[in-house]
Image (tube, rainbow over all chains, first blue to last red; front, side, top):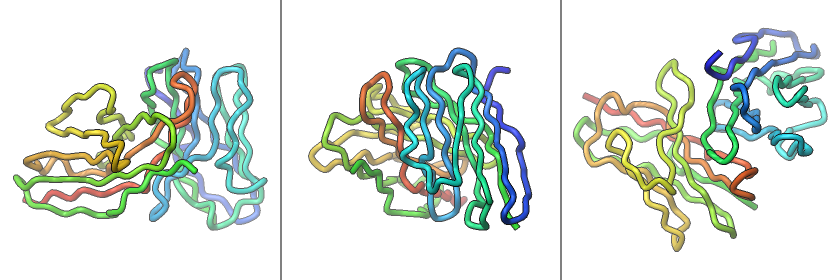
Length: 113
Length: 111
């Protein structure tokens, strides 16, 4: 596809369950970001992958959150033992080398009941 | 620590009025600043970047290092400008730098 693709677009889960959110970046983009968008909190940085370097995980809010990027392409954000405060839109973005412009997906809306 | 601050959550103006969305940053190095916009039911997208010194859709933004600001301005707001605007700071290496965002400002342009 031409753009960043995220799935699922909507996810409703029960408190305590694990969820996986997937991101397919634009082909050839070396950088991949995950952000969390929620009312009143703006766009919160979670994690950043750049090429083969170790990811910058400094934004992950707790050890229940983890992310992988396999083969320098697809990324999965995993939230274990979900809590109600995890409810938000999770945005993925990718960036080509040296451009600085981020291309965003449509997001995955997570609702934890 | 690096930080981007947008002090206004909501800015409401009438069509044709001037608009200024405020953005301040905290970074001791040489920053790269951006404005991103999200229109209703659309993806977040780049509006402009300071290094390009460009005007996009009538918007401009000047980096003021003395005041550590990067305010977004437009002389005459249009209804189609209604959207959520995010200021962003890229820091670190120009090739591998990380991008962080402010809290966002909702611009509402009334007819």
